[in-house]
Amino acid sequence: MVFSLPVWLRKSRLARALRQYPLYDPPHKVEERLLSRERAAENFAYFMRVRSDRLAHFRQWLREQFGIKVSLDEKGMRTLCRWGSKYAGLLLAKGTDGYPTGSYFTYDPPWTEENAGNNVVFDIGLALGEAIIANCPKLRWDFDPISAMLPSTARLRKQTSGMGFWRPVLCGFDNPVYEVIPLHCAYDFAFSMMENTTSVEGIKSFHEQPKFVQQLIFEQLLNSYRDTVKNYPDGDPAGLRRELGTEEYLKLVDDEANQGDHDE
Image 1 (cartoon, helix red, strand yellow):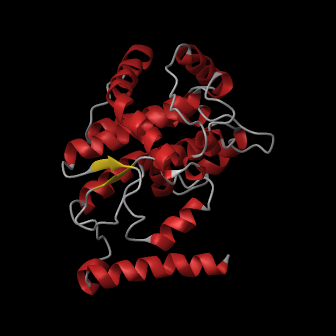
Image 2 (cartoon, helix red, strand yellow):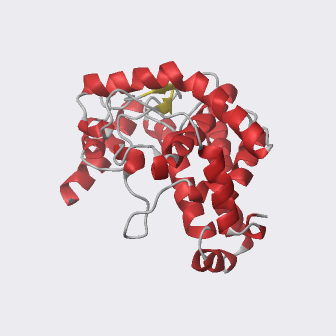
């Protein structure tokens, strides 16, 4: 159980394990939404080149440093959640406001020294994505599957920091604009673990939650995996595309984004 390990002990073990962890080193270290499409594509090409090696290293690192085996299936995602309940909350560096810095999205400060944990958070998302692909073979990584079909949605995301726009996502569902964002899911998981497992106040608040809420908090990665497999290959969990037809469905989705843009 995570709370049987003091925070200082978890920090010490993680700090030792992070020594020499490989840097995720795309050619353009700027939040991708601020890049030109061509440069965002170059960052994506880098991701595709290194993803297999990074996944292999991450899984080996977990075996050697923590004695766990993460397979690319539901069992592996459950194991990754258990490991993350102890260590993921310590991977994100805190800013002066007590919240994580924006470094995971902006690459500033660089992913070295106290921000080196961002490399592991990124690889948690990579492992989640590859586990999904292993069990949903029509899916693939892409960096912009929606702009041509949902221009208002794409414009709104490009204007908003921390959305991960033009970062790798999973697409390939029958619904052409349904996507899963494992890299962001990993960040949300690490942020949630920071809030619930790294301070006396957070741990106390966690214990005040109902048991089913506690389970949801600890199993975010697993639930993302399960939901994606459940929604594959349709990518239409609410049945709206089936009910409205593709053209009317796309219009509805993009109109909602357009309304949100006007509200701003």
